[in-house]
Length: 467
Ligand SMILES: N[C@@H](Cc1ccccc1)C(=O)O
Image 1: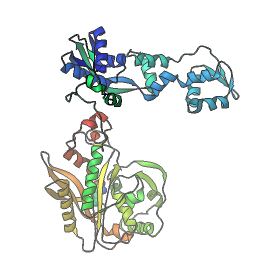
Image 2: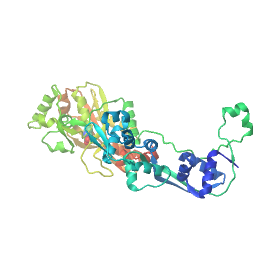
Image 3: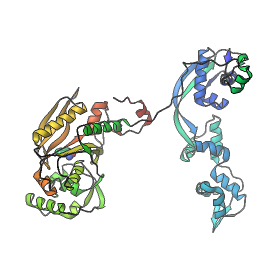
Image 4: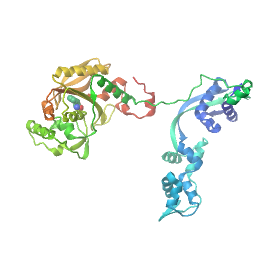
């Protein structure tokens, strides 16, 4: 029977134990777990060991830092060495300890090992022993440690919890193995020695170690695809900040300050005030509100800051720059609204707003663009219902048909009112819409809980199939 050096190491350890597991074998032989796995699979295929159990467990591993500290000592231990039982100048110690100085000082003080006196560090105790060192040593030998010690090591980032596979195995056949070579070396070739040696055979069926590859978050990916679609329809992307003036989130969009329409959806208020934009726009907006809504428009209210509650705020910022025509822009990003969080509601979610300004643009052109967008998104049938938004007239709600749910509300849209375009100096007709992106993503990606769209759980993301 031909056994490699690693296989022999494992076999001789198993001879002493009979039954063992991959973790124990790894710490006893010093072989990394992935090597132990592949060799155990090999040994199984040779009929020497039997795999009794294969399970996944969260295990503690020394971090790189932990391995370093195990060998070199913890920073506070080093500090005590540097002091060597004598008071020493802070500057001098700092010089010697370099980047470890701060941490060392913190822990040594916390443990009551030193005291600071003027510009001196004085040792208080002689015998020092950081308990972490023992814990690290025990762990590296595969021994268990108590809960408090684990917590301490985790806190100091000396260990981390990782999920790993464990194989429980039994030695079922005793073998006297003769050594085989794993590597064909330059020397063997030169001397011709290779002819006399035996080499380890390849096992193409052995499990390789699992190598996770980085990839884009699936919701990010979906958003990118929506962007691609919009660009392919001739739209350019625009964006603006999450923290927004009420002015752009509401006033420019003709939502009066003293009207319940302002609270058509609640918004998060941000402390402080923003600055209204220079130029004629503020005057024009004030005039429009006072003429049509008949109240005294307040620049104070308009300067309040909110977390934008709709990406239509970005649209109103574009308008405020009197962009000219023809214009086709879109924006996709987060909006914020207070709500009770559950499987279908979050306090932050995504919208995709669009704006078209074009000579001759009308309601029919708007519906046709919306049809085109939804077709591009994979929604085959759409239906329009009259709707209401303070800034559009006429307004529609867009419903899309999705199996097996039926008709689902997906967007709001309309032609921007003169009261919105005129103050911004836009004289051509303009169409706008806002599409709820999370809902769409959930439907297309088969996600049942909206919170999963924002998940950072590596296991979940790794195993999620991208549709
Ligand atoms: N901003 C509106 C949607 C909308 C955008 C643009 C035009 C009309 C409606 C909402 O959040 O509900």
